[in-house]
Length: 174
Ligand SMILES: C[S@@+](CC[C@H](N)C(=O)[O-])C[C@H]1O[C@@H](n2cnc3c(N)ncnc32)[C@H](O)[C@@H]1O
Picture (tube, rainbow, N blue to C red):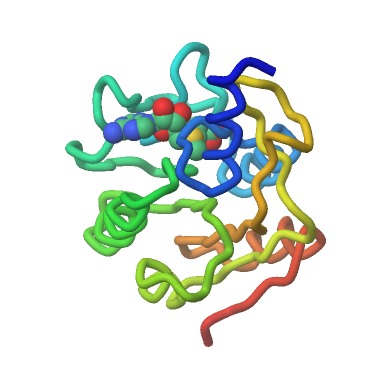
């Protein structure tokens, strides 16, 4: 593997690399809850969008600076030190009523500050590691070293539980 790829792969593994894309087997469950296409993917990959969405923002159009007006939204944000800006914006946009229903895919980390506001929402802790797609393929070397959590924002909690209940442990905040 080329040196650049090796460096990037090590950043995938320390969680600071942005380009790890949601695999189809996770998106299938997302679509079962939110419908397909979803309304908005605010953190879309370069090139052909990996998530089927009516609207998207890419790094070039910066999803952080626009309102997230959407009936349904799926967010797998760029991880690393700015992840809290993304998770915080989703909570704000949902509470403001701009985003009506959403699923958020993030590392299952309980020690970080940004997770605290998310704990007010239903969550599925995915069973096993999610094998993300990357520009370097999908190999043991490109996989993350942590698990994943999917938080649900919306009124159809029963549907979220019905679909994600078999994918991992669901925790409800009430
Ligand atoms: C973890 S990937 C998720 C990609 C895709 N949404 C998916 O779920 O497969 C996060 C993506 O956000 C993009 N990104 C980085 N900064 C961004 C920004 N300011 N606005 C929108 N997208 C951004 C990266 O290029 C990267 O492809």
